[in-house]
Length: 114
Length: 115
Image 1 (cartoon, chains in turn brown, red):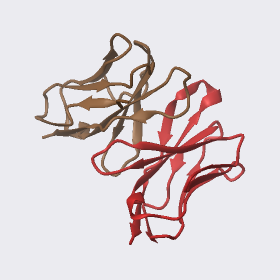
Image 2: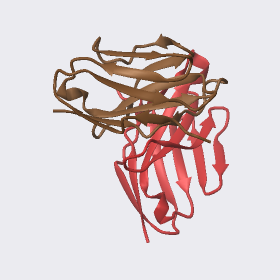
Image 3: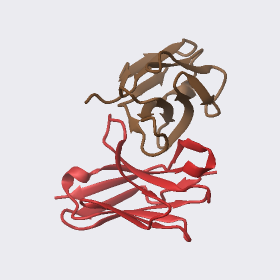
Image 4: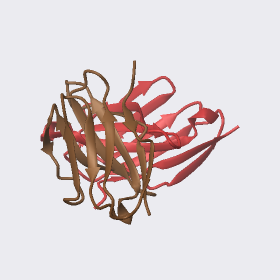
């Protein structure tokens, strides 16, 4: 079946611009997660959705970062007024309703802020 | 404060031999551990997991061992194949701690299997 998909696969933007990253989770997966991987680092948790609500936004680095999920499916991560330190691979994952356990990742969006 | 540590950035192994990837953790609330494999320009792929009630889990060529007292786990791949060459990430979560959604990752180990 179809896995997690993300778009765009690559994004180059200028400092100060806003960007929107999209995630389509695996059908039927109620939980959705955003992570970020900076160069040479492990994956860093950003935010978690259960259905359309986000019980934990504690990983978002600053108030320039926001995310929403609609219809219990697609999610968008928005970064306002991008900075060079926002350059990273942004990964989305989803997991089935049972919760816990393995999360299944998309291919990521590579963001470069010039 | 790095709660999941993979102290070897890289490992090189001959085809057919055993690959052993190590991971240490500091948070005693972690009770579920996972290994992911990542090829360049792709997302991490789930490989194998283990609950803290077990000390070993096996799936084909992959075996994960957990030593709770040492807060250490390892992934054994035998026999290693060139297609196993990738970055391997160790991850942990606290299923019983109310934050079962959050995975904490190590920085990864680059495995190279030489033909």
